[in-house]
Length: 123
Image 1 (cartoon, helix red, strand yellow):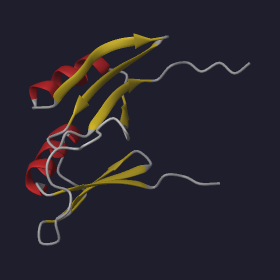
Image 2 (image 1 turned 135 degrees about the horizontal axis):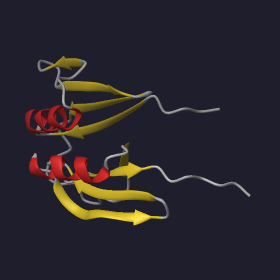
Image 3 (image 1 turned 60 degrees about the vertical axis):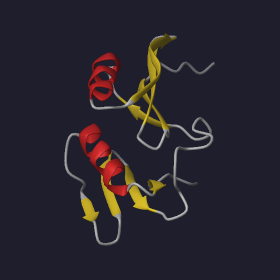
Image 4 (image 1 turned 180 degrees about the horizontal axis):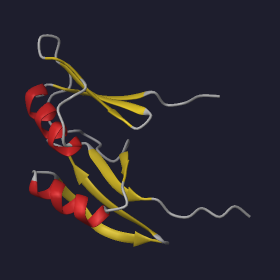
């Protein structure tokens, strides 16, 4: 069985991205090395990190290919907060079943979603 232990985003603008995600998580990184161009946050069971990468310049060329989902029960409130912090709105909050989803983008154009989990019914 596989589990996800971490998500890493490569970027040329490490300072901008690290500052953005520090605001998103509402705290300084749990691990940081400006010398090595690395910043990371423990987010639940997954470690989320930003890594300086010399070949990852400009906006994401296909930003919807991989989307990071941040789970919250306050989708609208988090959407408003992150939008005010500079997150680019891709799609405002909308209902999906009994859940809710909103899509934004970070400074490199990578998409992430705010997700209120839906009740899953297995038949």
